[in-house]
Length: 297
Image 1 (cartoon, rainbow, N blue to C red):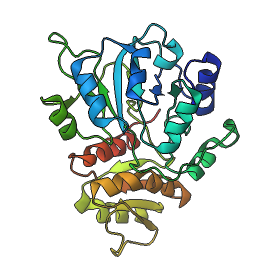
Image 2 (image 1 turned 90 degrees about the vertical axis):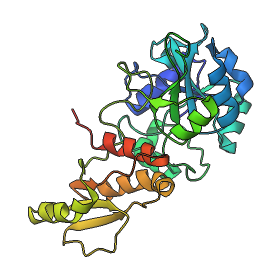
Image 3 (image 1 turned 90 degrees about the horizontal axis):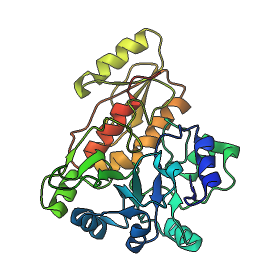
């Protein structure tokens, strides 16, 4: 959901369309690495290594913001989130504008992210003026967010605030040291709420070996149950809808949000699934599932 990142009125429309609190920072998307210095200052050597290795691509860097960067974009923080996307349509749009584009996911705040233009139309409808259809998302989940704003001998190394399309292993290889996840005390980046990426139906996480028995128990109590599973051929009880979620982490990431949307489309009252191993893209999938199952206000 995009707006000119230099125009306060345009940025305000993002928050209105999403129903998003204005204290939550947005990611500014740029056309090229050379544009970064107009938005951020004091960039470390590690930050520039990440840019060269992963941009354009699914990596967002949080850095000290340039004084000219709008506070409306940063959520009032002294940092800014920056990314150069890989999609050719997105890059052409940003280059044609000639400025940074503030762009969170095109959905209502806290709900399941879209991965197709049809999902955007379902989520936002008349709240947007135009939908630019570049095809289905290639990765499926949001970008990895890495905080490089405190990279110095006193503050410590870069840290991942949200896992995504670039793995910890890939980041560590480029950085030359271990890059780990860090839970931020403040909301410094998108997707850090306890409940996020969630369908209307509550989501429960159970061990894979217990999916069938848990589904049977809930179904026996009269609930219509969705099970996100890599084995849809099992003899699931009546009232249980098996929704495909591949075992391969990369394929699961591509399919995840469509599967979560299907939970509501099938009229299910509760969804069950199990977490993948937290390795590679499996870490990102597990993160999104935990947030989908998080406590709701």
